[in-house]
Length: 259
Image 1 (cartoon, helix red, strand yellow):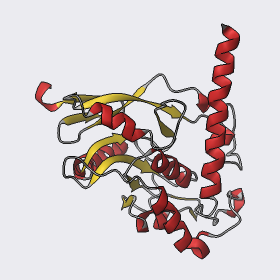
Image 2 (cartoon, rainbow, N blue to C red):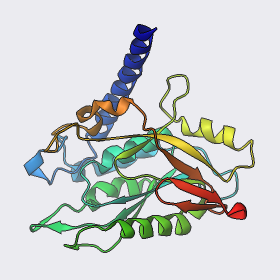
Image 3 (cartoon, rainbow, N blue to C red):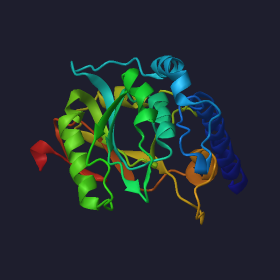
Image 4 (tube, rainbow, N blue to C red):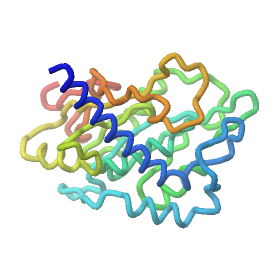
């Protein structure tokens, strides 16, 4: 029995590794190359492949429309500060089936170095899958948790109301829903099931990235650097209807009529 479980676990990991390889083949033209000190994972500059990147992202985006007359079928709100893996985060969730991602960008200048992510976001914005919201740009102050909560609530209340379903994820957290070992466009399978019930929100599983004792950022894709993501987190996130749900960031929510 133990051996069977181990084999099943390894099979799941292999599936995710294959998915990672596919993502990075796509993402190779999307990742900004300005941070030369860490030799980012691309041999092609974003600016010279902008049109191709837009076409590629447009082909990956979900074709599912809102069934309630809203702008999007599904949405993610996230908050970013100088994140080096933003392209990987966006690609994975677009392929999973999310219609739109709103990125609150709290860019920080540290020791004179500005790792602004605007250029990385440009092809995603042009493809219509990302909204970029600069917030307290070019600050040298440390990021405070209460800022994160303010931004998350603003994103859900301002943008999330235009989607059938919305969720908040940190930039190192990834939506996880597996159906018959298929990882592409699985979100809509879940939403179709949810629409059969009068729900305001549900708890969804997610995977997260952690350093495994690593002090320096690896010169590899995030999912390759931290393979333990094959195990889903025990905690859950909330996927809810913004118009009917009160979100308590990061992990709780209540239906408005029951609060």
